[in-house]
Amino acid sequence: MSGKISFQGCYVAIVTPFNPDGSLNEDGLRSNIDFLISNGVSGIVPCGTTGESATLSWDEHKRVVDIAIEQAKGRVQVIAGAGSNNTTEAIEAARHAKKSGADAIMSITPYYNKPTQEGMYRHFKAVADAVDIPMVVYNVPGRTGVNMLPETVARLCDIPQVAAVKEASGDVTQVSEIYRLCGDRLDILSGDDGLTLPILACGGRGVISVIGNAVPGKMSKMIDLYLKGNHADALKLHVELLPLSQVVFIETNPVPIKACMADLGLASGTVRLPMVPLSDGNMEKLMSVWKAYK
Image (spheres, rainbow, N blue to C red):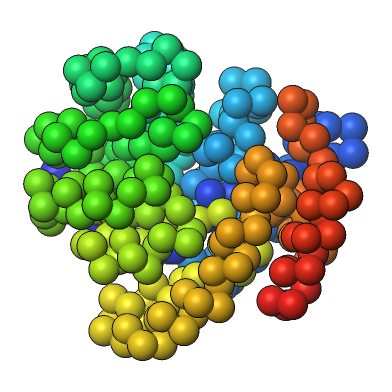
């Protein structure tokens, strides 16, 4: 692979819309992708946590990735989710993403089996050795039970396929240390909407966003303003978006953001068990913030 791909701006971790019977809403998925692209996002990320990848069959996973690539039509980057706590499965997903024409893959630290730092490194190296495609490594301790340390990220920098890290530890000091160790060898993308601006200030280049499903234009503009040096206006947008960034995690993602999307008339649909719709009390809190924002 010649040279590393660059990542900058607002990437949206897209939801997987379902029909009332729980099946994949393919037309809705295509429509959502067009909405995001028309609002200036840099890329889309199908089959991440927000896309309920954990409840998709592998056939559904591959179908969602294929639709995303088809619908994007090269207009924006497609970073296909290709993570698993089973390294062989992660390799299989990465192979499918490359064959289908994804620009890159996003691969999460293995969850549940709680590997050591060496285990994480070997997992990602095995995927990279098997599939020559740019990789975004994804650290989200709140979901996986393990935290990938900056020193491990720095080791991964030496692997040509590793082009970026999605950092969702919630620790800006950790992000700063990653930048200190890796510098421009690695693009840092925020994994927390509410920390995007602080992470930009610590060397970040963008976000893989949840709220971008509903407000792609505002999140894209905030990042663009900051990277162009207009920090004051970027801060104003950050403050404007902050209540929404917080309330969409009032229950497990993507339950709240799907409710916001439904209110906008975007395709969202139900969530699959073991997730359930928002409680009445939390729906009231979410809609209070959402409608005030709108």
